[in-house]
Image (cartoon, rainbow, N blue to C red; front, side, top):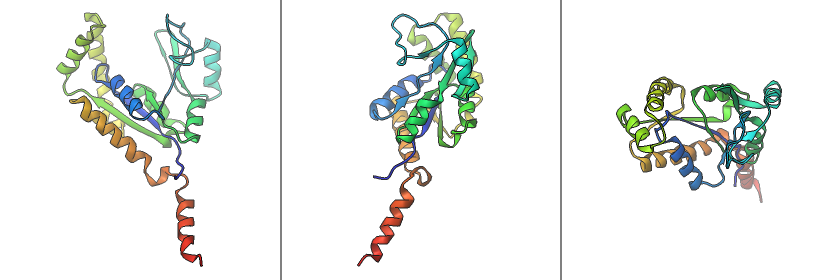
Length: 212
């Protein structure tokens, strides 16, 4: 088996387009995929487990990680800091394991601009239409009318960044979109420049011709 360096798979979409469901299905399909656990300065909510749901840290500790270039991306949301720690991703990459990121376009930009940006595969998931997106948000039954209106307004801004991604999928059928995601990941893993041991393998293969 030829060794390869792990990928950083960025999956973005407006809220309600199916990103979370697709991420879960992708990880069920391949249990070697690891999900990037974000660090945050906010307090844990009931039932949340440190290191599983989030990596909970102090404000000072978070800023120190940023200063030491240990965050691939970070942002402030409603007074709390959130970010993707670099260390676990680098270890996964060395082990040939891929890391899945559930981040918005801003987080995606920061990760692509990082020193590890050459290992990024970015995928944006679009809804089939804005009315369908609104219908899905209502069907979830989780948000009030003002929140839904805010999410719909934000979705237009997020969708405007679609051209910054390597792949764009229209999620009009969940099973078909999942199949396309699998195909993208499989093809990206097999790219020549991602297979770290390929050169040595070919050299050994060619040497077989010279053997007596």
